[in-house]
Image (cartoon, rainbow, N blue to C red; front, top):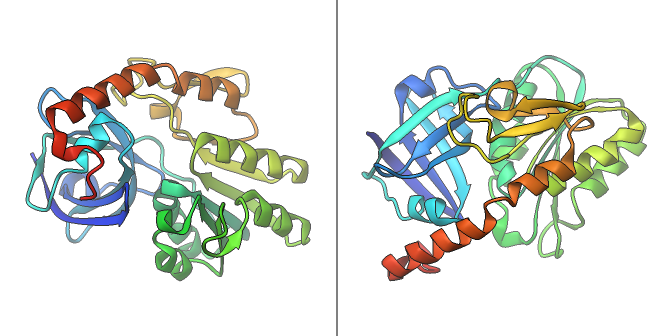
Length: 283
């Protein structure tokens, strides 16, 4: 069992949990993820690592309550325990001194872009970060991102905070400015990562994305997380989760993400029937 040592509500549906998992924390690297089982016989869900503290032996996760299992996870408090916490899994981010780099986080993707931006900054890069969300209430960790960035741009779709723009607008402006951007990292919804990649393609700037395909075992055996990259089948859990965004078949990825949408809706409805207090509750 893995004890929750801290919890924070970052937004109405966005939660932060700090988990006591020293064996995971001592090996975790930017870009990697864990597989969490909230309760015995529960669903296995992948969550990208938002932060880790090797000395304290803790791992920080940030997630949105979008389905039955994340809603259940969102009911947990400090002192509660998780049934299983497996990781770190996946290949870590390739950190080098590239020069000037862009780190783009959309929505809950701000969480996993943070340790990548921090590591790139520590490696000597000039880090320009762009973070965005639909509205101000869904933004978080602006202060953390600013602390690891040479420049930070904040956007909201509705203009409630920062610039009223999608993250691709300042991305294109920076690329058009003539500043020699050597590499881009983007993490967020698939549709956001697709258009970040399309925006950078004409400039021939390598763009790394962290894919969020459906995943079951996290070891490459089940095949559920398969994606098409460069015309070849890859498995997100062992070949990724980071890939060249210019080579990802985005339409196929988003189609596969919708495969179990009806089942997920039914599972959430059953959960809310069994736990009426969890329906739409602001924890």
